[in-house]
Every structure is written in structure tokens, then in C-alpha cells.
Amino acid sequence: MQKVKISDMTLCAAKRLSFKEKIELVRLLVNCGVNTIELPPLSGKKVDLLLVNTVAPILNKTALSIAVSSKAEIDEVACALEKIENSHIKIEMPFSTAGMEYKLHIKSDKIPAFIEETVKYAKSKVKTVEFSVIDATRADADLLVECAKTAKSAGVDYITLSDTAADLLPDDFAQFAAIIKKSCDVPVYVCCQNSHGMATAGAVLSIKYGIDGVKTSECEDITPFSKLAAFLKDNGNTFKVSSDLSYVNVGKLSSQIKRIVDNQNQNNTKTNDVLYDNELLLNENDDIKTVGGIAEKLGYDLSPEDLQKVYREFLRVAAKKQVGAKEIDSIIASVAMQVPETYMLDNYVINTGNIVNASAQITLKKGEKLLKGIAIGDGPIDAAFLTIEQIIGRHFELDDFQIQSVTRGHEAVGNTIVKLRNNGKLYSGNGVSTDILGASIRAYLNAVNKIIYEESE
Image (cartoon, rainbow, N blue to C red; front, side, top):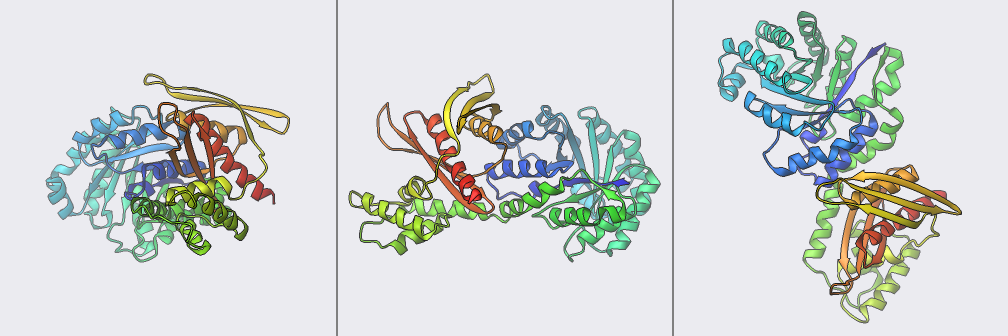
């Protein structure tokens, strides 16, 4: 049975996503079983390196790839990827005559030597090197074959052909890719443009003609990841094609991936920021409809019973002072959907510092059972949340995390709010303590217990 590999480029076009959303997107794609996750070219900002280092522990067998367009960029990318066990460098080049001359400033007769030098140098830095041909269908066919053979001799691991112009029908492009693969005898991936809605057809037909891998994305105009995964799941046996995708996880997680890339999460964040920054203030004369409208803008879907509880608490607070969006957020976390505690915090130990990775050891109580876990994370809060997930055996999508001061001074009491999203619905929990770590753990458990209770109902 033919096995096709999936290299996902969603993050290459996800420029408007927050840092947190990018990490969550990587986690979801890893759980779906994609072979490679591609990142955009490094911008020179520290946040790029921080993202690479943050996702490194969660990649498992999934490779991480970063694109370069010149030899000068290879050292920087190789340094960024040094902690990634399965790292790829993608040498990305335009292959139309205009692209070569205006972007690379290289004449066509000098291209093979340039490719040989660049591939060999990249190969000396990382284990896996890809040669990606932009605008492949507009390239001179003989030159493309020559360069593919040159790249193979230099040690390239696979070649990607992109129909950037989208000027071929799906079957024509699939045959074109098959001819290039046969002529150079190296694994070939395809990147099919979806400008005419035919990218999935182009990818499927390419697989039929023996292509080794497909580039996908949920927010770029190429083969949609969810659609190709659905085809492989439903028709893989018929066409004798398999992949490393976890189809169960794809089914469960694809809606979360789409929600992230559609920027719904960012829109919620923007709404919160606008509400917070404008310091919208309510008083006891505001009615339940107004309070419910603010809750809805904050992303909550409250039942009538919970809205009544929130409004009663709002009136209690509003009798003493004006109430802003942050207070309403805190009220919802405190009084809405209060449920019996499935999991309770028994004890925790957090280790952190500037020369060690943060780790958390937590013991939870479920009934009469004590459940223990330990995990390493990107900071103490992340380590604590990962440990809870390890104990419970489930991953929850963190939508928001806030720390608010309740009192002032050295021994100030902090109120933490954790928002988790499950099946598109927002659940919030809160914790209050002079110990922010303890408050954060309790807030996370508070939200988790609400999810578990509603699922059991």
C-alpha cells in the first residue's frame, strides 16, 4: 500500500495569530499525526526562536521545517532548529525566468551550481533538506529536471513542486509532477494552489500517480488539510493509500484547528481588549439584559439560570462600586455553573528557575483516590496545567488566562481566571490566593470540573 506524507503549512500563513494560538495549533497538528509542520522564514525577532523552543517538547515524531531562500539564512535556521530532533530546512526558490532574475538575481545557467552549493551546505547543518520549487509549471522543463538531478546528487531528501500559477488542470499537474519524479528518482511532494477550488483534486490525482507527499494548510490557498484527511480516511483503502494521520483525532480536532485559523479566538481577545481598554462601567441601575450582553461579548454562552446567578452577584457588587468588564469576567468564573468537584487539589510542588526547565508535581483527589503526575513546561504555570492534563488524560484548549489583584501590598491576594474551550463552548474557573501558582491550579481545575460535569449530564 502506498503511503503519503503530509507537510502542513498552516502556520506559514498564520501571521495574525497570537503566540498562544500558534502553540495550540502545533499541538493540534501533532495530535492529528501530520509528518511535518512548517514555519515561515525567520524574521530575526526573538519571538521566532521562542516559538521554536516552546514547541520542541511537544513535537514527538513530527518534524519541524523552516524555509530559507539563500545560503546566508541557513546558519540562522540551523541554529534555531538545533534542539529539534527531526528538523528540516526548506530551500525555497522561484523557477520562472522572471522569478529567478528578479528575486535571486541569478541567470538560469547559474542556477544548477547555486542549488548544488546551497543544498550541500544545508545538508551539512541538518539531517533533512527539502528543495521547494515555486512556480514549477512555468519553469523550463529541461532546466527543472537538471536542477532536480543536481539537488539529488547534492543530498536533497525530497523535492516539492508548486503550481503557483494554478494554470494546469488537476490531472495535467499530477502527470507533470510524476514525470519530474521519474526523471530525477527522488521523493516528490506537491503544493497545489486552490485559487480555482481544485487543490484537493490535484493532490489526490498526484497521489494516484505516485507522488510521495502533499503540502496542506487550513488558512493558505492550497490543499485544505481537513479535506485531504477526510478523503484519505474515506477512500484510502479503495485507492490503496495510507498515511500516518490519526483519523480519530483529525475528526475531533479539525473543528478546533479551523476555529483558530478563522481568528475567532483573536476576535474574542479583541472584544475583551476593547471592553477592558474602554473601561465600560455598569452600575446597579443596569438590567440583566445589559449584563447578559456583556457576557456574550466576552465569549460566554450562559444558561438562563446561570445568567440569573451572575446578575444577582453583579447587583451585590454594583451596590458598592461601578462594575467593569473584568469584574463581570470574574463574577462569571465565580458563580456561573458551579458544580460538584470531580477533581480536587491535594498538594503540589513547583520547581522553576533561570537555569532549569520549570516542572510541576501535582496530586489530585478524585473520590478516595489520589492521582499523581509530573510534567515539564514552558514556565511554572504551563508545567502545572500540563501536569493536570497528564493526570486526567485529556487535553483542554486554553482560551485565556488572567491574573487580577484583589488586595494591595506585599501580601496581596490574587484572583486568577482560566478559560477553557471544549467543543466550541467557553468554560471559566477562578482561584483566589496569595499564592498565584496555587490560585492558577485551582482556577484550571474549577473550569475542568465544569466541563466534566456537563459532559456527564
